[in-house]
Length: 437
Ligand SMILES: Cc1cc2nc3c(=O)[nH]c(=O)nc-3n(C[C@H](O)[C@H](O)[C@H](O)COP(=O)(O)OP(=O)(O)OC[C@H]3O[C@@H](n4cnc5c(N)ncnc54)[C@H](O)[C@@H]3O)c2cc1C
Ligand code: SF4
Ligand code: SF4
Image (cartoon, rainbow, N blue to C red):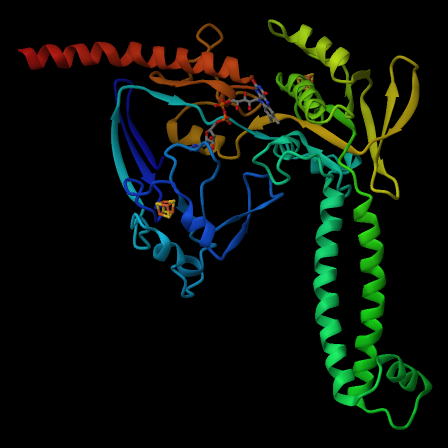
């Protein structure tokens, strides 16, 4: 949205539709372009834990189900290189490198702001180790790990183990390269690397620069082979995560950050712990909370079912710190309100239930639409008309006006549509009457 003018019943909006460099009327969503595209890009949808191509669909269920070129990452559009592989393989002739942003003007009687929320960045709580302990993840990252279409195809691989596997892959590649280099020197000189290393170490006068470099490469190869062998042993012993900790209210109900309750995170932690246990019955979870807010029809029963059927333990205690042992296992330190003692427990992985915060662009959107924000930064609404913003004809729903779960957001969206129809329907009737004469 670039500009909004007018008033209730007669708004005018100017919208920029960004170029996708794919003609959406021709694209069939077949995916051949992404299969052949040579450019790998970090996948933001998978919370940075996987890769996608430069031509991509943001997420599998997106509508319309068509592809888009990520222009800055594309070799041809963003880097001025020759490529065009996608255009060559696209049988529908849908790729359009010359496509431009389109400016669309809309006349509208009413507007609904439904810009949702962002998740709180837990790196501002250093004691939880989000940026320093690999096996501490956010709930959103955990959802991607649990998802069959996610970076681990639904397996609970620990981030530290994924990094170790990557390290091993790179190490093995480097070993192959160095081994080739050393072998070609051995063939050329008809000597073994061990003899050359010994000669260089003894300070023999017959040693030249080439032999010194050869000895260095041979020693580097030996050290790397040892490291790769250790990594191979370690990765062979790797298991998926079995013991999980969920930390509630990360950035919520905390006077340093957000005083409010984010309302949905208690239930999504129970859900995630239940799904993890459905994937693998050996998984057990501890949910650390001040109180578990199961507010909603059937929610308390769901929580109890998690305890009985999915190995979930509910621990009353605010977590103070997370540390890490030598095997990359996070250790959770907390004061148990049951024993009134400082306790600690080691887990395979920790999941942070981060707060629901206003989207980064909320203030800008508020300025553009001339509406006010409330003290937490969400769109301000009227207590007796909870979908009304401070400007007549502009409504809001879902997490744009405060934290809420999907059923509540959907119910609010229906209500907001009805409220907008109340504004627009009489205008449409007048137009119809005018047309009839
Ligand atoms: C880890 C996690 C798990 C959850 N699990 C559950 C669950 O199991 N069940 C449940 O009920 N709830 C769950 N929730 C809560 C759920 O995500 C929210 O209730 C829901 O997404 C709110 O919907 P919304 O449409 O208001 O906002 P959003 O889903 O945030 O949608 C807003 C949309 O607006 C777009 N947007 C933002 N700004 C602009 C702009 N300026 N211009 C154009 N577009 C813009 C965004 O890209 C986004 O697509 C979970 C939340 C988290 C963090
Ligand atoms: S752009 Fe072409 S190749 Fe790519 S998904 Fe669409 S139709 Fe298929
Ligand atoms: S829903 Fe639960 S975890 Fe989320 S802020 Fe409220 S009490 Fe904390």
